[in-house]
Image 1 (cartoon, rainbow, N blue to C red):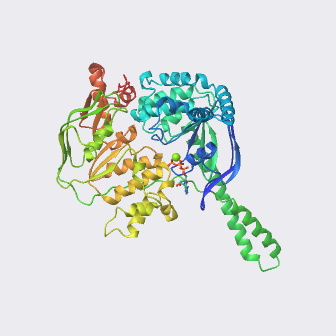
Image 2 (spheres, rainbow, N blue to C red):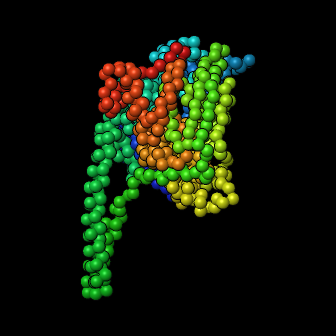
Image 3 (tube, protein in one colour):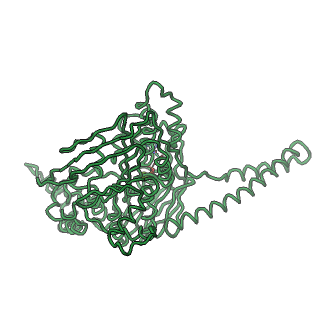
Length: 561
Ligand SMILES: Nc1ncnc2c1ncn2[C@@H]1O[C@H](COP(=O)(O)OP(=O)(O)OP(=O)(O)O)[C@@H](O)[C@H]1O
Ligand SMILES: [Mg+2]
């Protein structure tokens, strides 16, 4: 159980939440929701002890499992150690013990300390820890011969599974997960859902994925209106309860406003006359009514519009028989792209889909020139210029002490006035002081929005976007889908977001095990064609029905790791 009493947090003048009193019970699964920048990660950081609250207190169990947003943090650690670190008491004791054992001259004091450490290690089940960690790893599909390799040798979603094993290690009473579904394909999300259903402690999970929240949560804790409100039920139920509650408050407010206007009239009429004492008391009432003014919702929709400075020629990109093979840690080759060719024409919107680990990012990196193919060639067409949104885009936001404004300014030319920059920033919801925030303190969604502002400013005619919807809230995803549909240039985008692919793509490139399919039509038609292939005589024209059936398991290259 987690109990929060009068908890407040603000940065500078901006209140994220104030006097929050909520309780999270064991056995319930809470989804923590709210728009980008609402303070979800900050709330979890406070509970984890990584960030100070501005006021208030909270009670949290001693054993807490944590999944942070940073998937690169343990790259240089061994996989098994990464899991062991999940029990911080045990890990600290093990490290200190190993250090002491390396001492050439052990003093008496050190000897006593060693004895203490052995007691702690025993209490924390340290002597069976490796066995337990290995069992967890086996359970998540990481074979034994990989356990002692480094984290960085794993593809994204397996790395993520290890991080989840870390969070679960040592039987935590509470589990705090910050956006666990980012970077996961549908199959891995299904795996995660099943695992979370089995968890018995207090679960709190941040996500912008509606389907995931609906599948997992028994309650939603929504951060908005400068507070946190817990709604029983799943995400959809929260939205309708929230709308109803909001309508009620709004109608109460309208009544209040009416009352205030009547009181004002009275005060204006009688403040100087014989009824001035009465007018005074009415003034007090006005003050009281006005102080309960309605807090504004944080929900806002960015205005994304990608315009182009110069159009490209009709043929935008030509890929001729490229191949790419990686060498794995054990020296064996991993063929990712095999004899792939592609012709892209102006105005096409290509949705790239497929499970994790099949080579989508590799392909995009080759298209942008960041990574060379082993052989074959990639030619950009006449006047084609690339605007790139990389998957690990946070690494693009570097620079000591830079504000969002400074960062964006670097990409302007002689015609980019401050007004122009402000305009782009404003559209991406960095208005006023928000634009002067340090880039290192931006939330996940804010960082993504800033990168979008850069793409809008540059006005390239070929957009290459690698999972642009990770971290974005629902409003921003829907704005992006409109922006891509209306974009006069050409776009190639990887996404696991079926809604975005469905709305914006005019052509589909689907990564499958051992092949890449190129379908010259929108997603619904593509799914229909798959259905037809699987059972030609049963295919009906009802593509909606087909869509739900099409979630069948696709194998991926590391199924047999
Ligand atoms: N050190 C800081 N100084 C100033 N502002 C900060 C700092 N850290 C975070 N913020 C701001 O606090 C707000 C909340 O950030 P937080 O990361 O908690 O948002 P979030 O709800 O997790 O958003 P997202 O959905 O985008 O991940 C953001 O507007 C962020 O820019
Ligand atoms: Mg966050």
